[in-house]
Length: 371
Ligand SMILES: NC(=O)c1ccc[n+]([C@@H]2O[C@H](COP(=O)([O-])OP(=O)(O)OC[C@H]3O[C@@H](n4cnc5c(N)ncnc54)[C@H](OP(=O)(O)O)[C@@H]3O)[C@@H](O)[C@H]2O)c1
Image (cartoon, rainbow, N blue to C red; front, side, top):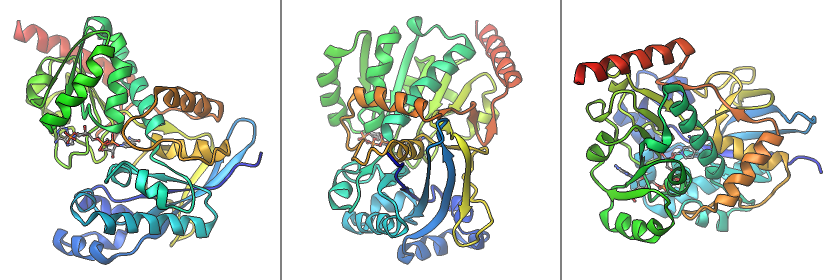
């Protein structure tokens, strides 16, 4: 069957990020940018071409911007935000898209895509199934590189009640000694923990005290909808591995400078098969800066592309109770279509073998200094 076409809703993750979308915004003050975004309609930002599976199947699509900042997505009236996201999907449909993905906070707001899908003319996915798969693979890769024995380790999932975090809890638990679930809302966390603790085959606990949990852990995965940093350098153990799925980032940039003994890795980046091109719609011939290395896309974008290549025109991932069977299936389909986990990266730079070696050495030194 012929591959379908896709659209994917994107939005700027910070004030600085706005200039990546609109270079003309550089130098304008934050209050003015926020104000402009209040009335700015959705627009087709990127034409994606050259996404080609090893068997020659090829898809194209569009990234359509619903130009709101993360905090605006959370603070504006829900219906207003839904309407902006739906308008972005309509633009995708006008261009030929048959399936839509929801990027970053467009998949977080409200009920995690359920209402958007009900109102959308084409099926919608959050892309969270492939994000979970990529995040878990990234966490184990980081543990391997840093020599952390998972079965003797304490792991923390921050955002453990969320769509991504709850599935990560179930996938991490069988491989670690101890798991700590962390979220912000105590009541929701307690209820969630009570409902899952019986299924978790390791020692498990839950807390809203992020700092205390992180101080216990060798392995940390973050998947929060926080617009502030949640992981601070002071809390991290020497040699800890932090897999960051959250967008915007929620690991303090201070970790990059203050903790050379800790491995932070962005967990949701994938290499796209073929000769992918991300071309600006308004300035044809110019590439859109995804803030990622060449040929690389986020796992949620990749899930949307895989569904298009496979002609699976269905609301694949929605809401907060993600089935692990879907995570396993999309991982298989992504591999079949030629998508692979991208190289390790954090704080806007690649993590080279030399960098890992230096991180391990710094961790050994810090451990010795503590004893
Ligand atoms: N890398 C990628 O390819 C990719 C793909 C998709 C999504 N994402 C990102 O992944 C993140 C999670 O998405 P999701 O769909 O799982 O969101 P979600 O279902 O809304 O879950 C968010 C979780 O974060 C927790 N949280 C929010 N603020 C917190 C804070 N300050 N401290 C601790 N926990 C906090 C929430 O707990 P409470 O309910 O207690 O607040 C909840 O457990 C988002 O940042 C999203 O943009 C990344």
